[in-house]
Length: 201
Image (cartoon, rainbow, N blue to C red):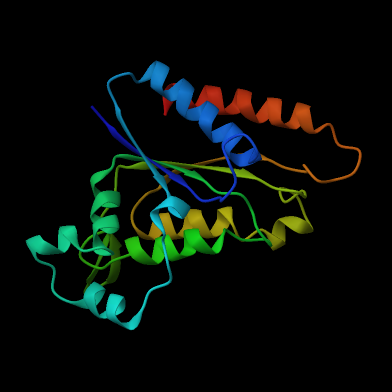
């Protein structure tokens, strides 16, 4: 039985977020094809994720003990390390990820839990795990020149790779705010892509 961590980073409802419309469909299909897997939903806004304080940073860099697994901040890194698969539902905001997702990444990128330092430098501890990023964007960021502006999926792929997660996929619905685009068709195509990936994820 695999453990999937479904991370949601949008204050909107499942019905009003175009990202969540796709990600919820992904999860629905995933459940159908992986009925024995455990799915843990982590809504970052409901969790009340905040920016790290000085005290939080001190705790993150302190020696890890058995009690660390129950620390209000460190528990997220342990939970992340314990999962086998990750689904990130996070739209592009101002060319990047929502700030709350970056705050969460600061919670989980912890030396000794999700990566470690060696004589050769940093080494990820999450090898063999896989992730998918589901993202809606208003513009087009797949091709030049605007592909150079895309720092949402690129950052998420990079930081997960830093932690050892190399099996990474993107499902994106783009051009949703461009005048004249068939938004329903774009969403429909993304839903179909989500179905196919969810079946074998």
